[in-house]
Image 1 (cartoon, rainbow over the protein chains, first blue to last red):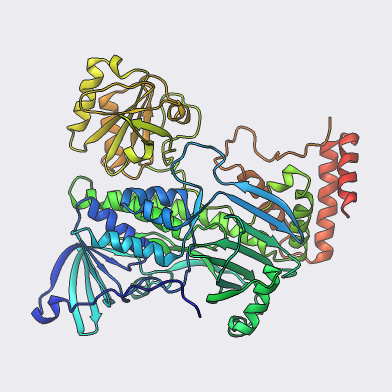
Image 2: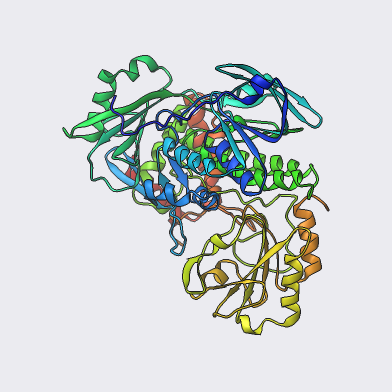
Length: 555
Length: 74
């Protein structure tokens, strides 16, 4: 098959422990250098935590696999330092179209609102995402990457875990204070530890073909129910980078995967879908089934599970890799605070609570999509087709068409880390919500609100005029910055000005104030992962202190 | 009163983070109601359901509009 991509080969070097025979102890071992393991390692390193990253291979993901990366993932990647590389190489899109038989019945726009830095989705082959993350990881001295290092045993202990690691030159032992398991859906470590993951397998098979071709189709997601070129099944088309196109055909449970993968069977399907004689080449073909399941908890003492190792969903909705990146985003700041002794270990219970909540939302939505796409009974199919027929003309039915509810970050409304509102707010920036972006100016430089938050705790102070912020409020900014858990205050102001000890962002269009339902003096306390943890109509340092204690499991 | 053809699912007092959620909640409940029924029993369920909902709507003008749209595609 043709390849548009040159796979990098990462150098294996024999670990020094092999010759020395000593057992090295490290603060964190991350197992698995896929997108989620890499994101966790990079985020931890940015918090100053040294990470040993082990992977049993020496290259990136083979075949394109994960394709769609959502706006929230891009915002996290911005903070990790590879958002631009991913967006520049990827294909940005916002519009999805759904067809039933010959006609379009429904379309959606993921980002109906202007004034956000990142698009609703980009499509990019997973190997590129991993390459960019690897490049970033390699530039961080706090990360030590070891290729061809396979974990073959794990012994959990009260203060960490003992690992045995197999290399081409033999096995060595390693001790970790904390073990982050990002070793994928089949998670060998989950099995070694005898931990359960419960859910169901769907009785359907899908053919994925990545093809290389010249085509002028717009960068949109096209989904077909029962198309003339593939009767009684569904099909999906996505554009990727390098003139690669992702085609996905539902095959049904009785299809023979080995037969379906043969080029002589794949090519006619593609030819029928394209409907013309344009030349194309196959780059990757596979037949997959999927499961919807999750572990009961994602933290087990000193062992923390992230990404597919902890939870798996159907691909409809792009909720797999995207939710894994959010796991990393949620875990890294908490683990860094715990390692640093600035938060108790029980803060990590909230990692599991919050991400189990998110996983359940992803499982619910992706299961519903799957049930719509693959009706399990005659009655179910009749309703599905009736919805699609009515959708041509009637708005209510269009809203019921479900070809995938695409990944959006969970609003962690039930999180124990939130401080419930005491003041009245309209809109959706609830405690637990991921921050909405808005265009702002820092001095003369145009930029985005999200670029000025995250990493540590941030306070967004909304002001009509920076010059009129009273002295006690300015003193409060200084007190927050000097606390044991420093809060960096960012003033979001309607007009330019300067404030000692705080960054001033000008919200010239008023979009930030509008999206946050902010008035003069409104204060938002924001977590390091850019979720709201509390908000008030006026700044009170003591109240912020209580909210910080709560957000770090100290209350 | 005319037949409402705009998205209309929801529960009083409930705010939804995602517009599709109440419709998807209904659709799941509808399909779940048919679980493990054969075609004949599914048809009976549908007939009973239509009668219940029609009585609840009551307004014959609205019902005639719905019947006309449903018949049109059948």
